[in-house]
Length: 270
Image 1 (cartoon, rainbow, N blue to C red):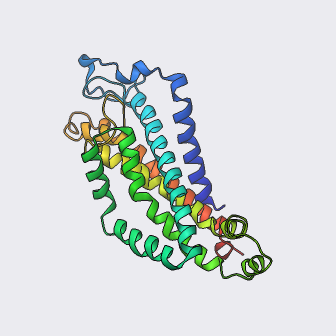
Image 2: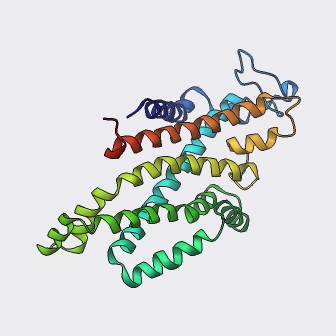
Image 3: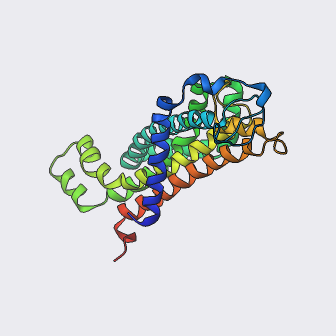
C-alpha cells in the first residue's frame, strides 16, 4: 500500500478507535448536560473543543457523533454492497432477459433520480429516524456496486478457466462463487471504501437538513446545522464538526486509493 493509503488507514483506524473507546472515557450524561451560563465558551483545558449554544461539551458530542456516522456508513455499505453484489452477479452471468430487466430497467430507473434528492424525499416521507436514514441511503447506494460487479462478471465469465469449469460440468453456483466472484470482487472492495466516505457525507447532509437522527442524539451534520447561525459568537461550534467530517471523508478516500493500487497489479509501481 502506498503512503497515501497508509495515512488513510491510520486516520480510519484512529476514528474507529475513538468511536469504540469514547464511551469508556466520556459518560453519556456529558453529551446532553447543559450549562446555559457558559454557552459559547471557547476551547479551554476543561473543554478542548468548547461549549455550544446550550452549554454542552462539543468534544463529547463529536466523539458520540463519530459512532453515529461510522455506524451508518458500515451498515449502509454492507447492505448496499451485498444487494449490488447479488444483482450484479445475476445480471452479468445469466444475461438475456434477466440482464435486460435488472441492468436495462432497474439500473436506469434508480440512476434517473439524483441520489441525494431521492434520499431526502424518502426520509421526508417516512420520517426522520436512524432506520429510515439507513433505508434511504441503501435504496440509492446499491446501484453503483451492482453496475461494477456486472461489468466485472461480463469480463471474467469469458476467461478460459471459466469455460474449462463449465466444460467439466461445474454448476452455475460453483462457477459464480468459486471462479467468478474471487476474480471480480477486488474493485468492489475499493468501491466499498470510497462508499463509506459517501455514506458518511450523505448522513451529515441529511442531518444538516433536519432529516437525520432526531435530537438529542449527536450528529456531525446536526451540529453544523445548529452552529450556522452562531458563527460570530461561537466559531468553534462550526470548525470542529466540519473538520471531523472532512478528516473522515479524506481518510476513506485515501484508503480507497491505496487499496486500488494494492489490489490492481496494473497500478503497482515496478
